[in-house]
Amino acid sequence: MDQLTQLQARRIALAAQGFTDRAHAVPSMKTFDRTVARTGVLQVDSVNVLQRAHFMPLYSRMGPYDVDLLRRASERRPRRVVEYWAHVQALMPVDLWPLMRHRMDHYRSERGKWGFVASDPGLEARVLDAVRDRGPVTARHLEEEFSTGPRDRKHWGWNWSEARKVLDYLFLVGDVAIAGRNSQFEVVYDLTERVLPPAVLAAPTPTPQDAVTELVRRAARSHGVASAACLADYYRLRLQPAPGKASAKVAVDQLVEEGELSPVKVQGWKRRAYLHREARLPRKVGARTLLSPFDPVVWERDRAEALFDFFYRIEIYVPAEKRLHGYYVLPFLLGDRLVARVDLKADRSAGVLLVPGAFAEPHAPAETAEELALELRRLAGWLGLDDVVVGARGDLSDELRVALGR
Image 1: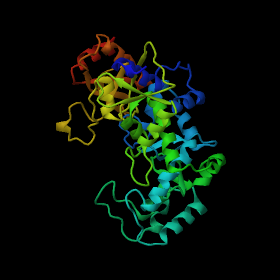
Image 2 (image 1 turned 180 degrees about the vertical axis):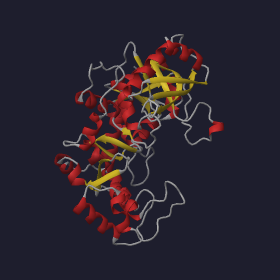
Image 3 (image 1 turned 180 degrees about the horizontal axis):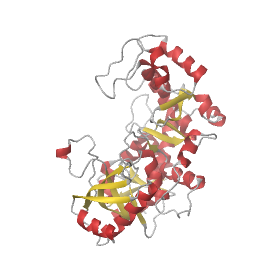
Image 4 (image 1 turned 45 degrees about the horizontal axis):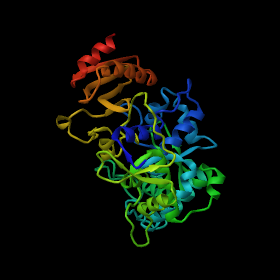
């Protein structure tokens, strides 16, 4: 197969992401493992207007599930997933840890992702000793003891305490790991050897290029078909070769030479694409679900547009009067197309799923409102909400309101 239509590429991509897997009546840890094997990572984000980002891709593929599955997998032994800077901040299978050591070494040489250097050179060792003696701990537990002065509270999001900055640096370089998060979504840190399974810690460290090649291989499995840029983006890898640096392009060329990837042309794509040898082309995709803005299907916006003719931007940081669709807008996947988008908010105090706006795509089929109504009821039930209330914004809102009434 050296040429694919856009429809074929779309179906291959959705199958690779798990949307054609047979549903389990009650999602179990086996379902969880299968799903994470498809997605590779679950992006973590603090926005909780609907549901935390890392819970949503599991719902989109597994259906309503007990969220304790994810907590057990990420916080209890034997841990299946752990947080690291894999795509961005993300939960990843624990066996990816050795593949991230080249990234940890880079952060150590660069003194952290933001170039952080403690004002007190001995602070790093003292904070690490405190975690060793008292862990698991949050930054708040150590803040007063390790503060060097009043905390600057002028700049939200960049006014971390010295303890938090040191802990984040220790996390990036792998000296501590994230043992979980508390009810306020604060990171709980502990020594890496007390978080990860011994077998993972004992695994050999690959060379940087070998690590990048394995990450590109996994990205190719998760994508099914993708451009080299998409393969590099999945784990945020350097695409082009540079002196002394590992490269996703080198990895792609190696995987092509070994026969794991095959160059293909995809209708409408400007870039060359690569098809993974295990990719499946299903006859149809019977999906009906909402996708988080941080779902792997849509997080690379150019890819989403190339596959689905779906131009998508998250508008959280756009002033309200300039937003086109709303604050927290989710694409609606029906079959193998993204046919609509809905602005959603969980009003937990009132027990209501609010839909301030609903918008149909130009190619949306006639049954879109009915199908979306069913999905919104399902989502509300999973979130423990009793009703769905549709606002006035969007060309689909009136029809959706009628469908929900039926």
